[in-house]
Image 1: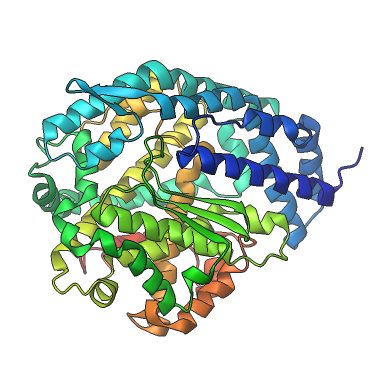
Image 2: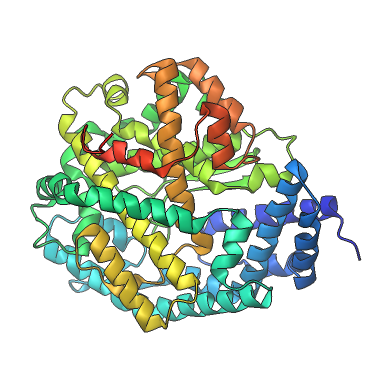
Length: 500
């Protein structure tokens, strides 16, 4: 039977909305169960092998927006096909993470909240003890599920006719992952001579530890940046976000489609997230509270996603409102998040005066992140490209991460530190997209672009498009430039160090 794309699209939207709602209520800590199996069963007709084959065939004869819609549906169907086959393990994994506890100093802490405890713990040995306890639970309870999902996903990619999971996602996303990896490797090589010089003073300032004594367990405390807490009063968090949006001509309180979830709950995920349950009509912004800069960065990042989804033109096809290149929505999220380390914003919105030390910290922190994510991409290309045995990949993960960050890196999270579908590539592309867009906004509207309603109008006009265009197309349309990761060198290296 011929596939009717409009009917298929309506049911696909119903599925994605139900899945996002379930994701929200579970990971926001509202309920223990993660009941995705019944959602997949209710929409099982979406995820048949013949549907994948029909969409691939249909794609060949299409162009323009029709081709975009079909490709986005194909990607959703393939991911749903794999998700349906691994739904039991995925549900068990989420429920286990929510229910597990670890033992620390004779007491107990929830597995998820232990990450927040660790990031606020001033004692290095206790941070290490927390990480060891989490790692023990990860190895015994979670890694078998991660491995089962990974191996089944690889099998299914081949069953669907692709050479490998890697080849499948390169075709579905239309991203040249090898070219991106070359760019991130060049970035790593260019920053290598400056890395310790830039990062070590900030490590010592935040943790009292240099690279010689650094352990991975210390990094969460480094990223927490407690020495700069005075810049980020907790009582001003939401007000500061609201005032930033007002500068762009956006009234958060008038957005009835936006719901902020800032309460602490024992089962709440330690990772902030945005749940676009019905785009643009029902968007949830979920933030776990860690304190200081972390809370501001998380709120502004997820706020960027939220404003993007909440501003999408409701008349657009489902595929453009929900699907597409997530480098775009991540780029908008990073645009607002970057304000939290912007000199002009810090002075005008927070009334901060001496921000030099913090800005230098933020640059060092960003450098660590960029190098780590470049290493993640290289590792995941091997992992999903038929690299080696689990033991070999564990060693490869530890080697790559350790070399990128400059610390002995435990191999135990070689599966937990992997997001499905090469999402690390979306982050890397989004960082470049954001840097180029921010430069354009500063050139057009000045250093205080975030206080210009015209800048807000420009952003909302882009947000209305959803993700119809990919990051390459959109940055070209907005700025006339090509998406180029090398722009990140100027974000982290001192003037003159890039060789330009």
